[in-house]
Image (cartoon, each protein chain N blue to C red):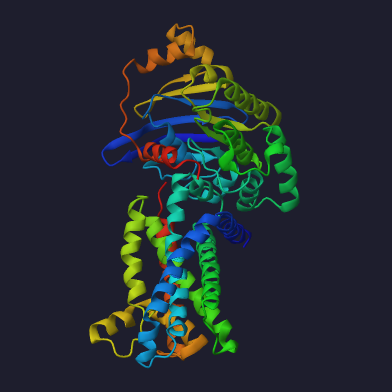
Length: 262
Length: 248
């Protein structure tokens, strides 16, 4: 479903993604793990047509993001690392807008919106403004939105960042359910190793732009002789804390806190 | 078409829901209208210009549109900040459609704002001299809206700094407003000022509205329409270029 071959992304001198190759078969849940600045988000951006690779080839649902960006975009749903809802609109309006952007016809749209809002348990709040939602509710709404156009692939970039354990549990349960019942391929990143251990069929660990290990969670633990995936992860990537320059996204997060939900 | 429609609808909803913003943005034109209109009114009449409110109102309507239109560009920065821009940019639709939806939405909001200011002008004593030409006035209001929303889109696409945007826009908007003939007749001003006014696109909009509603056209209806119409098309085109270059 996703095929990446020899992918490279340079930002000037800096090599963010360094010759990576991997494949995600249809219906699998694929965890893409790595310390800060390892190249996870850069890779997702290239897979989702937002960023042009320096070199290498990508096929998403059989389409090349460079040559056929619209087909690629129609194939996936995405939950970004940062919220991307319009707070001034209601939950329902956010989904309506998404449905129109993705060309979902109105009859089907209404049906699916109801079904998905019930799935993420937000149907009772459908007429509420999104700015009044909690972080967890926003995330659930974004997942519902990402599924509205019946994508084959779901990209989740740190979907549980900053959420309480209950909500995180809930979200991963949806994801599992989608993968088993609808055969949706899931590509996710997270810093919570216990989550990755529980949900992923396969994991790739990236560091400094390279895939340094890949396999089932069990295989990675076995390979490193560790009890938990977290220990395995640290054994593979080392103990040093990665200092990251405050990126644009970090600055925006701060701004958002200052300005509130608008 | 559905895409453009839904994005326009979004802007409209956001506008209607932000009542404090509507009232807040009415404040400035209202102050100008009252302070200038009644302050300079007697002098203007004594100098043989007739009723100053009659002269000023089209300028103030243009001002209301200008400010709303140009500052609609900040919505791009807000949407970038709050992530919604990403949602639209990874959708399987062209950036041109998204840009057109946003720009038309912003322009429609500016036009409505202009109509509201127009209502305020009527309330403080403005009277039509040519009822029949009201559609022409509305056409010019729409052209001003589109032209300056496109300028807002250009700056909103290029600038990333939330604090810089209003500063830069004020720097742009103030001269546009003051050197447009919105506040004073352009016949007898010094040469340099006259050139500035002729180079200012807003002048043609102000003249179009004023010409249609009260005083007759200074530059001529055809010139006003051609100048602003051509510029609107060019600026929307330029705007779509800059919008298509936005990096997330």
